[in-house]
Image (cartoon, rainbow, N blue to C red):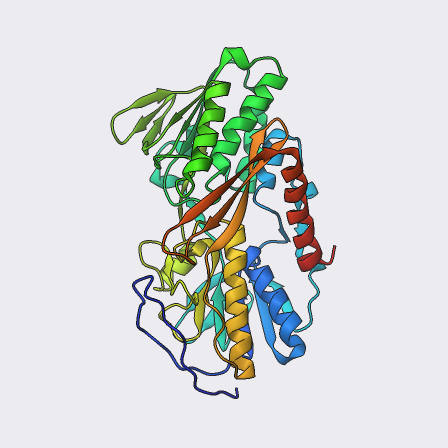
Length: 399
């Protein structure tokens, strides 16, 4: 492939400070994972370069779904089919989407092996998200209902519908975890569901987290959620990490025991096993330069939940990181200067129950401190959240 040497900017924000690389111009781009990051990266490269770039996007699934639609499955009667967008609808110039299972990654040579063959790129972007380690909390799989996978959300819908008295516990088993507001949303939507069915007075709801507050980057958001919990009689217990789950109770690391009749769990997260096996991870995630999303391997990037980039694990941050990688690759191909660094900005919508939505605007990297600005819950923000989803359906799936 044609190439030219160029140096990249480095960041002092993490352990990769000071390193640089000079590598070939990227014309074959291999993207692993078709979530927020992979879809945005493929779309942007197609828009900017068309058939000047050969993009291969690999995902093992048939379709994409927004993560927040799991709550719609649990509490609003949505089906998996109704919230799925088939990858067959993705039609972008220069982009080939393959449904294959990734079995090995060699970051040294940017080579990926799948159940259908071998692929190699001038640039490799790992956007495979995070997997769930249920075994790290013994008893969770057998006695609780994890709701962070779509299969788990579907399986939890029945027990939630049948719960009409007793103690419900929503337990986050480790940190970091995807979509930090989601456990709080689950607690509030469970309260709505039980109130709607007229059984709320017979039920207790407790939310436990290993974090001290519901949304640590935004004290204002955490205060608003805790105030809402107080008004609804929901107990919040911070700095609580489950050790194991017994048939009728959770045992926490500090010895606390919480009995339950319904347990909804958020499992500990980690990078997918195939990523860990590649040797690219540290502490179960892929370390990257937070300004450029580059790993220590030449021509290899990581975006989204799989990476340690100094930002929350949520789709909007994967999307923002993908835009930075796309601009970097476009600049390489065109021989232009490096683009502006990743700013770590993004907005998360939060279900406050009673059909109201709040929003927190996060900025993790552009200033001297992490900030999170809270926008109070309203019906207008529900319309804004709907537009957030519809705009991405249109952009990625031509809908």
